[in-house]
Amino acid sequence: MACNQCNDSIFKQKIGRCRRCMAQLTVLSLLAWPVWWYYFADQPKTVESIALLFFALSFTGLLCVHLLVWCYQKRYQK
Image (cartoon, rainbow, N blue to C red; front, side, top):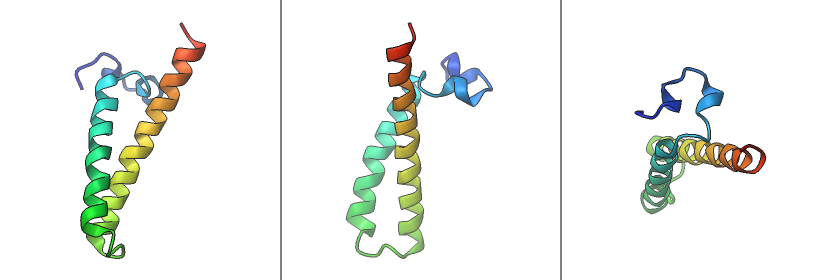
């Protein structure tokens, strides 16, 4: 990443501050869920389906953490 916060080494300082990270996670989530639903929803026990499901859950979960911290920062900090 090219932003100043992402060059830091502490994970807590990165979460909720990087708009580029949040944009990438949004795009990845919006791409992964429809692909999983269209190609793998009917066969959820295959390796490909489980792998894509884990990736989609990871993207969405990390995006939720980013957004929660971002909302917290907006509300309780300057």
